[in-house]
Amino acid sequence: MRSTSPTVGRRSSPPARRRRGATLEAALLEAAWDELCAVGYPGFTLDGVAARAGTSRPVLARRWSDRVELVVAAIRHRTALAALDLPDTGTLRDDVLALLRQLSASGSEIAGVLSFVLADYFDATGLSPADLREQAIAGIPGRMAAIIQRAVERGEIDPGRLSPRIASLPLDLVRHDVIMNRAPVPDDTLVEIVDRLFLPLVLADRPQQTNQRGQA
Image (cartoon, rainbow, N blue to C red; front, top):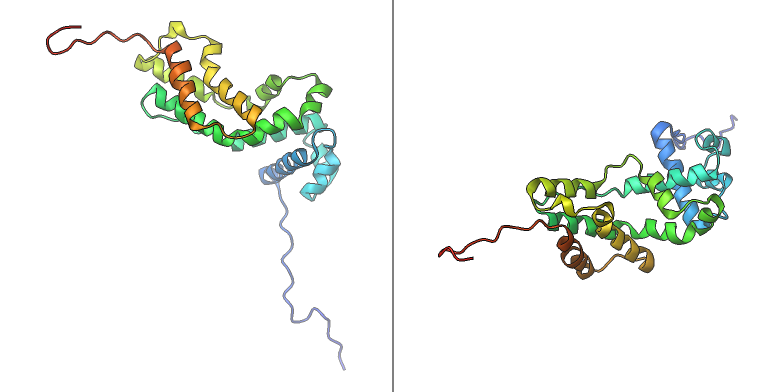
């Protein structure tokens, strides 16, 4: 009597699809981000990321020479995923407020990692959070700068009142609140930042309009 294999009559599972190129790199960076959030910088290793990604250390080492490079790449990847849309409402106030609402909603996770998980990273590398942020957003268009430029072209902003610190003020205040509270910023706080702190510093003086009798 002919023996029957135990697998006869069963459908075998399809072979695992190999990840390549951009798909593989995105998976590796997602694994690196998850590992960083799980173990912090002191416990972050290429071996740990490889295990989490279901691959080998050489696969990572071919792309990033050490864990410092991989951390920066993972943060850059996560920042790009959370990239904000460029609002275009037609007014400076509504553009800035829309941008701050996006930042508040999407930035709490990244801000938490930067401020708490990476404390040892900053000590080990000598970099500051600002240095890391510049590396993470390099090449990503500046949305606040675009909003301000449009407002200048519409005549809403007096360019003479601008400085780099004033231009970044709304975003800096929201980042501060997100880092300190590790939560989205209340909407009334966002409105206050725009209406009471930012706009009075930058709005161009409007010619005083006259009423129907020609009186000022």
